[in-house]
Figure 1: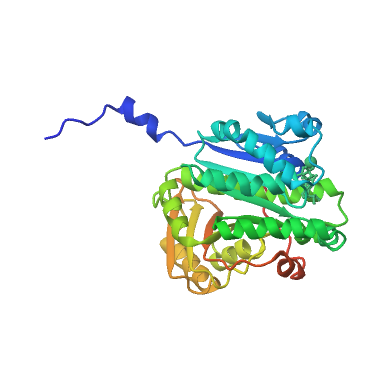
Figure 2: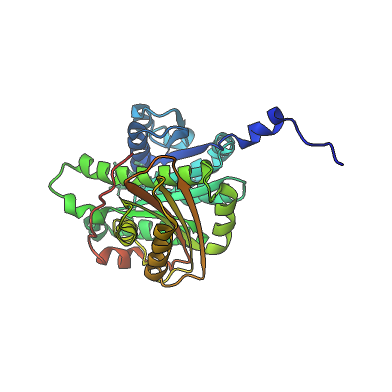
Length: 343
Ligand SMILES: Nc1nc2c(ncn2[C@@H]2O[C@H](COP(=O)(O)OP(=O)(O)OP(=O)(O)O)[C@@H](O)[C@H]2O)c(=O)[nH]1
Ligand SMILES: [Mg+2]
């Protein structure tokens, strides 16, 4: 019999939670990361990368990286994507070295400027050549910004098209869908969006990092994504006695801008208490299948806590989405505002 069974102290280190990172690119991306840090992201490392030294200095995140100092002298790019791409080539080795230890890297940027819009597809492409799973998160500007600035619109459309073509997970949050909050101060509106993003990030990390009874781990997520094409993520929470409402809430609260009704695959994960029954799981899966247009491939997982819980959390990775232009996305108008609160 083989005796090469390793003592626990050797292999146990491999079972430690693989770390994740959130990386803000440019002004809007960095501010969103700052908000995530303020809301609390235990175990997730926070980075800000910018061409703007003053902005970077204001950020209270653990890791800050200035790029393009030689050409741009720490003053930002002023919307010039070409200069940012030169800076990115220059700083590529350093950035990739610092991101290499992480299993999942969320890349955040507000589209329409120079730094975030150019860096995001660049880094996503580079990270896809490595073991790290990049998850692009983009903020689509308000309609008025697109209507009044053709250059910005073209910038936004080019970036989103590039990301859609790459496939994989993409979280596109439309600022226009926050119009319901227009009587709030602007930073509060962004805070609502960031709280929603916080629930997406923490739910995905929690789903893959903490073992469940029916486990969806990082390897199965990566395998699934390899075949799923363009995919996105939704989360929802609802009372355990109403599984159909849970599904409806997860799908309609979304600030994401894709039709989910003809997707081809889904990972559906439920996190609940001891009162989460097989019947509830079955009703959730049936409702999901129906709302997603009977996807061919549906994987599910559950985590059941020892004590009963009133609320169940649903996390779903939905694949096979058809790309759509920002123009199409924005005419759809404001959706229901998210009711999720950050945990
Ligand atoms: N400041 C800020 N802007 C946001 C936010 N969400 C979306 N945006 C939009 O993000 C877009 C990009 O702006 P910035 O992030 O400032 O641009 P940048 O990536 O730093 O690029 P340059 O400054 O041109 O080098 C703009 O259209 C903003 O309106 C947010 O939370 N904060
Ligand atoms: Mg900037």
